[in-house]
Image 1: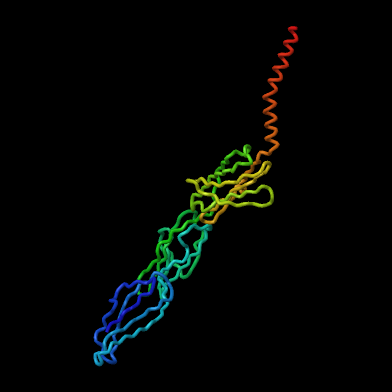
Image 2: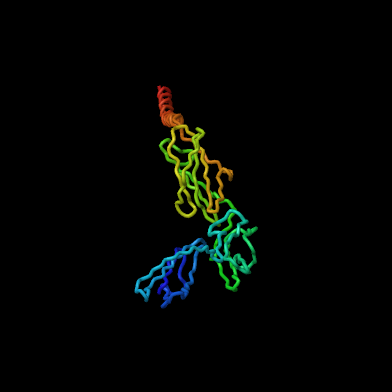
Length: 294
């Protein structure tokens, strides 16, 4: 007779033949098949065991399939922290362990193990990168551990260091799209996203995503507006820990005025005046000179 075990997902066979040869079984005799299975996650798992062979008395093929469900808790499964940045210095330490266990502890940043009996909170963590491992001993003295988790504490807002605008604030024409570049930095977790927010003074703010051009430079564009329009805009930056800041928060006010039609007319008048006036003065001077000679 043979016994075959169907291995569920997230589990792997560590030891034991599969199929397992049970040998010749007479009526009323019990035989045992043994397997060791490793689980990568906690959960409820169903095993199918298939028993097959020939009845030597009748020469009939016999096959029996049975299933059994068990709840498995992986020893030392670390649920929190996760591999990500956090915007707080107090982070929950949450884990699950098998039952029974004789001891549970954790090591933060490679320091000596600290004993815990239940989920707790890691208090007052310093800014910057950290790592943690949870350990547990079962009643047989075997120690298991979670995988090492790397995480970052970042409570600081991103920095908005500078802004350039093309064309310049005093030279935006009605046909110009205005390109805005800003320098954004975040030393710990990095910049996740940035937006450019602008209004033409009509009460509606329009938000556009900024693109990371290269390095710390982020860019977006404001479309053309008619003569005489006043545009106000600000930049919002968010880091990967969720901290956010706007240029308004930092006291930076960005605005420009689309050169109005009257300005263009005045420019033409000024140009004509400055061009013709010397000519007129020259003619008047020439006439005076001619009259004097007469």
